[in-house]
Amino acid sequence: MTWAGCGEPHAIFSGGARYVPPSAARRVDREAFEQLTEQGLTVGKGLDPDFEDVLHVLDRPHTEYFAHIRNGDAQYGVLVAIRGRSAVLARHRDRTVHLRSLGDRDYPTVLAGQLPRYRPAHVETFSLPKDDLGGLAGLLESPHGMGFLHVARRAGGGERVEAPTPVGYLDSDTGRLGFAHTEGGHLTVFAGEPGQLAARLAAVRAGLS
Image (cartoon, rainbow, N blue to C red; front, side, top):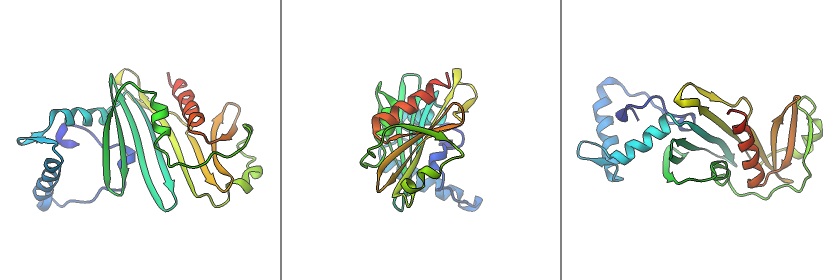
């Protein structure tokens, strides 16, 4: 991303960084450029302008919805980055990144749709104090998967502000349970349906306005 004048990569791209000694920098840059060329992302000796636009959306989005996901032994990250009228979906797994441009969409729903499929738990929504999680112990033992969905924004393109509490989910034998922090130091637990997770994430985003 430095070729496009961008800053540090987003947190979902962490885990793939490696030290490159100065003596190998030119070779590594050349190999990276060749890989981009194979994907049709370069023009002449530079990056394709459309690809550069995508990188700038990822670099300083006005709003971002992102998730850190564990599914069994696999872990990956997903980012929905919105800047002006442009939006990009990025998935990072096993040091491979997939990018896709998005139109005008319900972006929390887009992010929730990137979670691995799992049946929702058949539970009624309930709340409990965050320091009284004993009642959940039986439901949360040995989860098959879990994830945290976050929101951040840059008002007017300024300083990045991330919501202090994410929306989360756990996949257990009971099904997928969603949970979200609410006012008064409580945790709300609900059936982990994509629509409910997206609605909770949208509510967190509204709190950043």
